Amino acid sequence: MKLNYLFPNKYKKVGWLILIPSVITLILEFEPNSLDFNVPAIFIDELFGDKHFFGIVKNNILNEILGALILLSSLLVAFSKEESEDEYISKIRLESLVWAVYFNYAVLLISFLFIFDIAFLWVMIFNMFTVLLFFMIRFNWQISKLKKSARYEE
Amino acid sequence: MKNSIKVERAKKNITQADLAKLAKVSRQTINAMELGKYVPSTVLSLRLSQIFEVEISQIFTLEESDWS
Image (cartoon, rainbow over all chains, first blue to last red):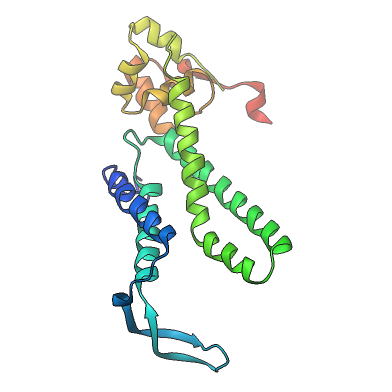
């Protein structure tokens, strides 16, 4: 009955400690040559070339490392239990998640219609992370509102 | 749904924080229930009933709007 797919509370801090430096490094956008590697790929679509499955490509792996770190750490931040995770918090969590999915797709829909070409590539890149981002913002906002409203006891 | 958690709490002379500890939920949850913002699960309702030592129907009462 207690199954809720959440991580223990202490992982929230771990998540933040990985997430923040990873995002900062990604924004700085540097690609040290020492991280250029030949790596295996599942699907390859070469510029002016053919498309084929499975092969080796030359790639700077910093993006991959940071992307993976951001993805995993934001999951930890979003889905670690609150200090006092109870049924009411779980309800707020679920509502925030539904809200975040709606909001994310609303943003995506608008972007579909009004952003084109290479600019849309940016939309797709950001969209990989925005569901969790919108969820985190909404959920934490709701929780802080709740704490504020419960501070004064009659 | 209406509830008399606040009344029962006053009878026992315990704070929201005390009740939260006894019922093993956060104080925010107790507060939200008292304000009618949150309808608790059956498990939590039964816990409250045991803590207050009253029948569950004495704490919670249905309203007309619960049928619509």
